[in-house]
Amino acid sequence: MVECAPCYLVISSCDNMFYLKVSISVNNRKGAIMKLSKVLVLGLGVSLSSVSFANSAEVVEARALAKQFMGKLKPALGAAMKAGGPVHAISVCKDKAPKIAQDISKSSGWDIKRVSLKNRSPIAEPDAWETKVLNQFEQQQAEGMKPKNIEYSEVVQENGQKTFRYMKAIGIGKGQPCLHCHGTNLNDGVKQKLQELYPNDKATGYTVGQIRGAFSFKKAL
Ligand code: HEC
Image (cartoon, rainbow, N blue to C red):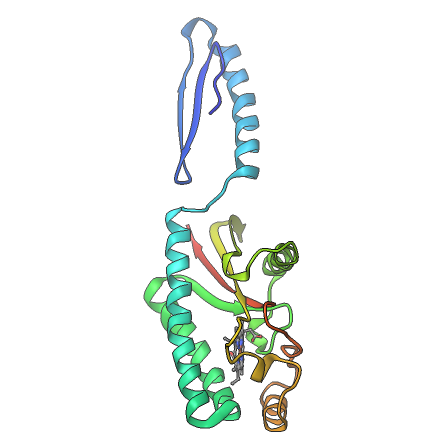
């Protein structure tokens, strides 16, 4: 909260909404307005750098969509692994993952994808903002944060359009099948299939606990 006299200014935040109340004493209007604009710039400068979007409506929605994405992909992957092993499951991943992203994008109005600093799919190549955030995620993980708790959101200008962007880390958990296809000891069949489908694959050599990539969502505001 910021207050100043003779103008009276309150900036308070509630769930990421900023309410601005201003009243200026009549006998000192000009000076007060100048002061006010200074305080406003100062106040916004402080708040923008320290704003946490932790529970904004957009973040809550994006989190739910990420959960929905995982909730569809994981069982599909598990079933494919069970039915035909990792080589068979690779094609399921190739077809299913982008399809799920597309379906959820369509139903929610968000632009939804997965990205990685070491991407397998060419469509998972991160843009500059995503690269910055993925590097930040790596840093947070190195400092001891668990991938499942790592996320980031920001309002950015994209082509003159205010855009909400959200990313959530995807980790390689214990007891998950990830390393069959992203680990260090891939079987020959997997290696061959991956080479065939993804000649520029960078997504191997991982170990448990690492960040494999992230969900990346955006929406025009
Ligand atoms: C059966 C092999 C297989 C398994 C098991 C597997 N993946 Fe993948 N993964 C793939 C394939 C194939 C792609 C590329 C999909 C595409 O073309 O969109 C991929 C892509 C990804 C991507 C998108 C970024 C990129 O590099 O393209 C992430 C993130 C990811 N996998 C995480 C995981 C995690 C986490 C697990 C474990 C829960 C896992 N994968 C298990 C085969 C697998």
